[in-house]
Image (cartoon, rainbow, N blue to C red):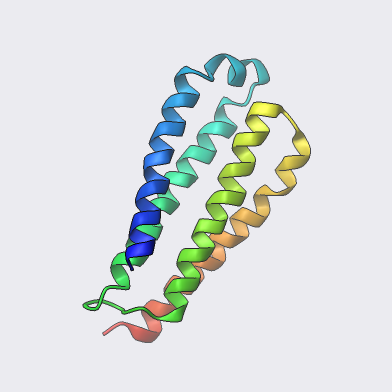
Length: 127
């Protein structure tokens, strides 16, 4: 529980910092490469899935769903999704190396499967 809440909080904190850094310090690079929207998509998905990881940590508390293995899978898959999806978009937008876009769908699939595990946990263990 604590691990996911702290991890989610760190991810959302970094999302704000990366978004601000992109909007100010990297604006010229992103504009020159025409990748502002790609970078912003990475920030948006990082923020929303960081909040999802926090939610999973809260659901793992004793009073809600508990520390079921489906929630652990959900949290870890959302974290993997942030690294693969948002991470690949950040690197793509800064370097212009288009082959990195091939990594992004793996992050998207990680997000989808992570949310699916959350649905399974809620259906199976909700009181």
